[in-house]
Amino acid sequence: MDNEAIAAVIKTRFSEAVTDSGIFRNELTFSIKKEYLIEIAGFLKNDKDLCFHFLSDLCGVDRVETDGVFEVVYHLYSIEKNHRVRIKVPISSAEPRIPTVTTIWKTADWHEREAYDMFGIIFEGHPDLRKILTPDDFEGYPLRKDYPADRRQPSTLYDRYRKGKE
Image 1: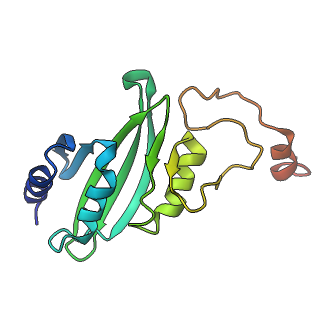
Image 2: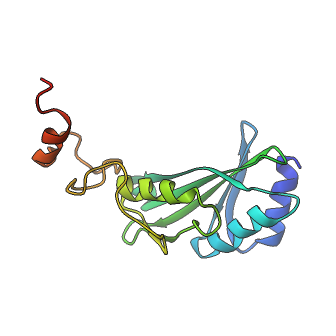
Image 3: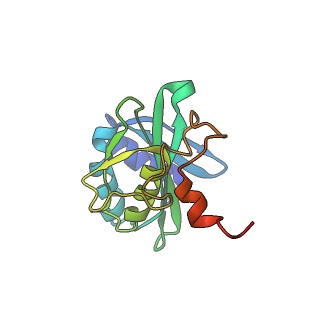
């Protein structure tokens, strides 16, 4: 199935959910409303013609300064059909919450923990949403654009990673 056919299927079935779509450099991207995420994700995985069984990546994007939102981006791949799609879901920067997709793709577990740790995005229903890259006492979210580049972290980071190595 080519990008145009995939786009037609998704736009027809979820016309009320899709807010934008496009193909750039042969990559198909959709923006959807948050409330349709679980329904669309389940469809993309289970539809026999789409078979997006592999969530290859999930990441956050800080668009707060330009659009007032964070974005959660899902990169899906069908190993069986050899096609890809990218789903973007804008969420409020004032309340960055979105349902977990760990019930659909198990690999979302670590990806969602990383987005939580780096951006502070809450994945509602996640089975174990805790930091994965920074220590428990790390303050703030280092990939947010408002995170100060010269910010000093608790001394435990120094003790943990650099002490005795200078």
